[in-house]
Length: 259
Length: 272
View 1 (cartoon, rainbow over the protein chains, first blue to last red):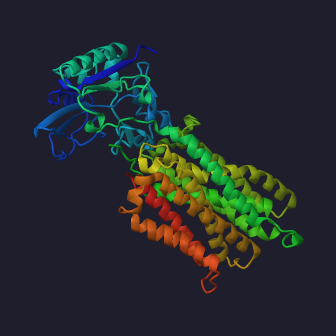
View 2 (view 1 turned 180 degrees about the vertical axis):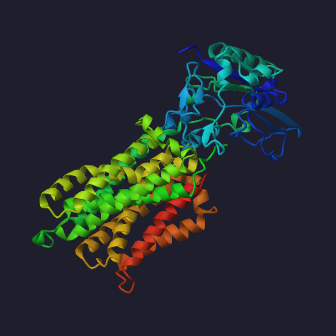
């Protein structure tokens, strides 16, 4: 495997211009969709099969009565332990040599299990093609030495693309600096390779706790439940089975006579 | 913000009929191995019902795919930790057992009956699997309502047992075979299955805690309480326990089937 590539989104630098969102649409040839009223500048309200990159606009009331305007360019996290990849029964979802997670459109048969297996609600089903899709980190571009369209176009370098280890070090420095500057809420999300989901290959610098950005505090791998539920099912099968055996058992003489 | 897989009626029907297929098969196999000659109608009806149901299930699943022509892509991989992957394989394996058992149940030959019993002892495992894996499949998603209790597999298994037995009862009744020993044993087994399902359901709701809200007090509540709990579980059990003779023997079976369908409906359609 080649060195893992990653995306570092520093929300403290985001100005909400949405150039990334547009660049993503352009490069990936994603058609327009009905705009949604979300109560803020944000549009769409969430990832869709036609929106892989989405700038979130969060207005948070502060103690002094003023609004804090938080912006965050959100994207598929390309998790090191990816629920969608684990769930995919056809093998359409695969990990590239760079550590990113892709959906092979030539293999996906549209079972949609991955859609509900993503802890972030990223993967979407495209009704026109009958397949699931999501951000690929611009797979075609990164295999040709170009960065993803969103990172390439970001005018403030809020979105940076590169080798994961280098970006992680950069992120640690940046968060320390912000804290020094008085941003007490500044924190990294998904950078820790020993953290939830084995670390996210798209990690973030947030200015507030994850829940403010609609991110789960501790995203979990859905497949963690398989073993427990299976064992409980086996227990249930034994009980139901014994009940049925007792009910059907031939009590000497009654049914055995004519067997 | 989590996403739902956009599963609708085809999947509701699949979960329901798949439960019946699994439940009918293991009921028939248990009757075959532990019952007597008088249970022959239960055995034969159970095997053939499971074969027909699994055929319908396969078609429902293929139709539900976004790209149905690619259904065989499921067979390119085997992921032992992935309920969807194992499920696709086991559907085929179960179908094979249902087919062989059904074919052998049509023969009056005693030698073949012995072989059939041996085969069905193995098939029981796949019957139980088919009735429960759909629940485990829901548990392995990111949606809290489906996954938090980690008891969906057990719940679906209990419901698969009670609906499988009820479906056999209904068929025996319709074919005028409801006076026999087999029918009474079936009722006894179903009584236990219903009681067990009630216990699992209570535990399920307790474990789910606040994630159960859409079911017990949300828009699905009337269907859940009225349709599943009262009509599908409590009334059939009361009729059975009180021995209400004025109630035709077929009514509890029909109610259990309706309840089993409502269970799958409220679960699949609740995406909280």
